Image (tube, rainbow, N blue to C red):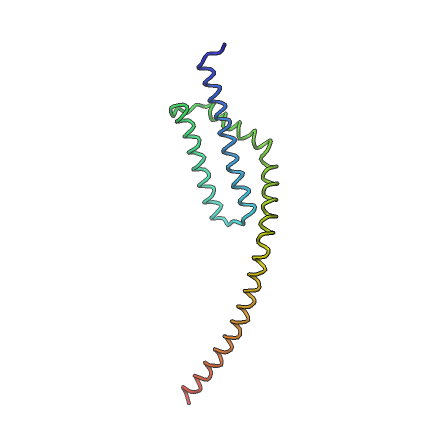
Amino acid sequence: MMSPGIIWELQFFGLAVLRGVLILMLYDLLRIFRRVVPHGTWSVAAEDLIYWAVTALLVFQLLYRENDGSVRGYVLLAVGIGMLFYHQTFSNWLVEHISGILKICTGVLLKPVHMVYRKIVQVLKVAGHFYKNKLKKQLKEFIIILFS
């Protein structure tokens, strides 16, 4: 029979592995979001900063709640093992397939919106051209009257 202390340490190790999986799953959500929605450099930097702050809070919360805030090397190793396991097994497959499905869905949903948007832009260009020419004509008449 194992001692209760060893059982607790093994459970804590398992929780740390699961926390590592959770951390990498959150990053995969970020990767999927970046594939579906185009991003600039500043938004990627801001997202990464928020992700790492959340990650630090998740690890801190695990250590504080389960281990009274004591940092142990095997806990960080367990988090890394969980991340590595998830990355090697599910991560890339899930990111590729989920982002592919979301791209198709957003493409289908946004196609009518894009068509309406293009028609509105065409109408506004024609109206702008018409009023630009009308404004030029009125401005010429005003200048002629002003200097006559």
